[in-house]
Length: 236
Image (cartoon, rainbow, N blue to C red; front, side):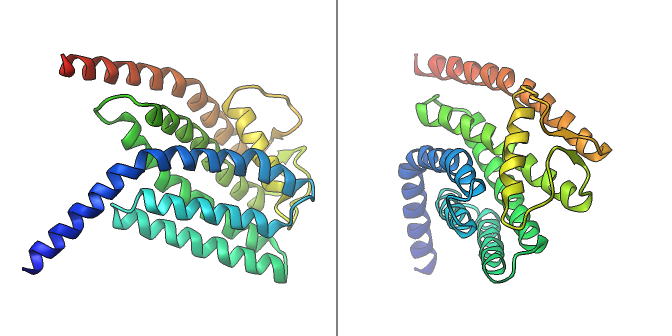
């Protein structure tokens, strides 16, 4: 009887995830883009307090936790990231220091590693190519950029002169906005040159990100075309 009840709950949970995971994937992508390209610049310009950045990130984590709720490990990772972001927000409001930047960078890294694995499985798995899967591919691309933001932040904290043009690390997370800019400029191979990696570790990470930025679109396009052709053959 107990096994039947557990199985029923698992079936209901799976049905719920199957029904809402695709729309929530699109919603997560929109929230993620707003966080990166709207909230972060406003915070860096001083128009939003730093804790709004953390609250927006927390909202994204909660949505992500629902999407990946089929995995205990993934959910655990999400809530660890939520705890870290909450601790960083409290520390920033009480006594800003490099510690809150480190905690927030760690939360970003955990979040992006978990989401990256889950979204990659959903995007590149066998099945029909839908709009939501294409949007998921965009989310994965953004996820790559933000993963490198965390790694660049660790390097900048350990070696304050690792980036020329970055400036002094600010306790209000303005450095995060600058690193978001630098990461996506590197990922897309734009290379304006206003922020330059000078430390060997920073240069190595920048090289890896630039290579991924070049390979990802071609790999994604080839994989999606292959999956769509396979799906059409099965439907015939």
